[in-house]
Image (tube, rainbow, N blue to C red; front, side):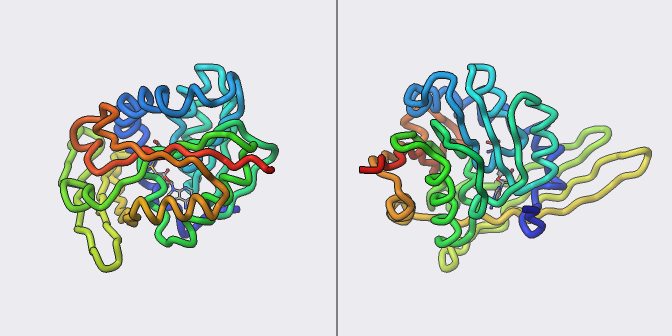
Length: 252
Ligand SMILES: C[S@@+](CC[C@H](N)C(=O)[O-])C[C@H]1O[C@@H](n2cnc3c(N)ncnc32)[C@H](O)[C@@H]1O
């Protein structure tokens, strides 16, 4: 199903693919290798929810796992297909997707689930993920908690190259709506013409209580949360970030 209202990463996909993947996964993948991956069946099927341009899918595929990724952005998915031709990728909304067969593990990284802006939609995303998993399969994800939005989330950042320019600035967190936003302006020189794109990325801050309740209602149990800094993710990326590992309930 096309997600026209969610395709905000479409214009950003090229920059994301070039600059955003490696730094985060250089820190996050060793964490996933400690807290989640040993629990996934060897060479099993993994579902990557909000998979972006497939960097994580590539790391998992290289270790023998069979990966299916879903993402709302057609441009992110197009790059994921180029990056990891042996994985399967689908354009789909995390709160509405259906995939064939059952998976041995699921994952969602880089505060992707904070992009889901209502509690109902977050719970629906957990329900869709639970429906795709075998009983007992582990699901790991990271989300930003409130302290991340109060500190240096989306600090001003700019990048100037001969043929592309990016300017990013956080425009604040509203504690009443629990929404944060970040404005990104990009220019790319294509066939001799500068093309401008503007994107506003919204994120919603959830409490650990809200996340835990939504997981329980969706059919997960044995949920554990870890502070990213305790797992070795230092610097701004680890600030206010929690890694969650939970388990799809077995049918009794
Ligand atoms: C910060 S990127 C992270 C991408 C990838 N997980 C990674 O670790 O590099 C957030 C991703 O979530 C996707 N996304 C946001 N809202 C979504 C939704 N409701 N359903 C599916 N994907 C969504 C965006 O298109 C984007 O690719």
